[in-house]
Length: 309
Length: 313
Image (cartoon, rainbow over all chains, first blue to last red; front, side):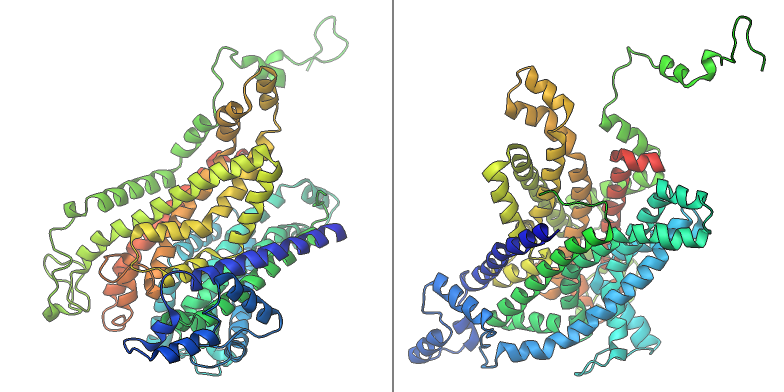
């Protein structure tokens, strides 16, 4: 286990450099001059351009730019936006909001998804199961932004239960509706995953043994079936962080939340390359770390899994 | 039941024993392939026919939109802005006064092109790279796996957002390729795993013993036996690519506004959703039905191709 953990951590290093280099390369070396874009239609004096290029290291070779950026990254300096604000400040303002939004979404999808999936799996083929399947298929096939619009219109505008836009500080109450929208697709996947897994495990030998030795159905389901069915669900929750981050860009755009997604969205539109690179680099690091954590959890949850050396 | 004369113990008639079932198998009957079994399992399910008919219909609409509407989707009259349905215009009009039905029909092409092209590129590339890595192993496997890890670390739509924001004037083809760049590791990983387990099987050893060349074994035996899970994922991914295209267009970095697509129409509909929800409803419904059709087909394929799932049903 220790050996496996060490190897996985070492494997993360090339992934980190490769992924950040790729993002950096896409943003900075493809056609389009960020300094020229900064001025829009106006033509600044050559001196100003030169000074700005030097300030953002744009006058150096691409590979040097990348390593200067990475050096800063490890020293905790994520660079400066073209409007002169520190990217660290922008991130410090945005991350707590998105963190709370993602926590609410994860909580919702995990609790509701597992409960619905468990009931559906226990009653396979019955009405509840069939409707859970239909609803989950619908949620997966309707894009998040359409669900966002519809929920905002029905629960926000028409019924007036929630505010349609989230205020600057983003209190918990205002994040509930966006979190449900953000969680909707993953909720559907968790329902399907839990259902299939529960239905599978109900036929497993260890469940027959547990029933045969006289345990109550309640205990069989909660201890033996549920515990074993949660292994794939936990794995999914980790991988799902990636789709939650993308979903956050859409959801925060719709509800006007000033979190990570909203900031990235605005930065893309304004051509703020440093902000985009830093935010996405941090997102990728979180995603890779989450995947690692899930792989390790996998082994801890299911003793049958032994990693080959 | 009485014992038969001359027998100390009860012996069942042959017809009542499990041996009889084995005896009844006709040795001359041709061995049935996984695909024939899968087809038998699929065609008995009504959802298969529903999704097949839907996909066929969507393909025809995408290829020949002119067959389904005579209204010019670009002939817009601001006098009709957000107007309700009228004769010849069953879905009403959008904010610019364009016919929503005609735009929904003509928007099919862009979405279907992106989904089909991206799914084909990803599948082709993933199958080639994944099977070579899994089959030959060594440095090739290490290279493919590590490069795949890097691309896998960037969520598909996130990477596409970055790349699309710097690319000029997108077309459905560029979007398909951009999505493929970040989506191929998933297929490659699955293919690699499937090829690894298939190449340890007895029939591969038998072919090797018969002197069949290594590459020929890969083409004739390993890939056909390993490709089933990839086909399932590719079918489902076709739907998710369509959603990804719509998401990019909605964010304003996908197809330019001049190209008719469901994503663009849904994106522009947000300004008039309160007063005239039909502008959002129809392109969104068309998109969702298309994605649903491919998801259902993927589900049915998975059930049909996975023998363990069949056993528990």
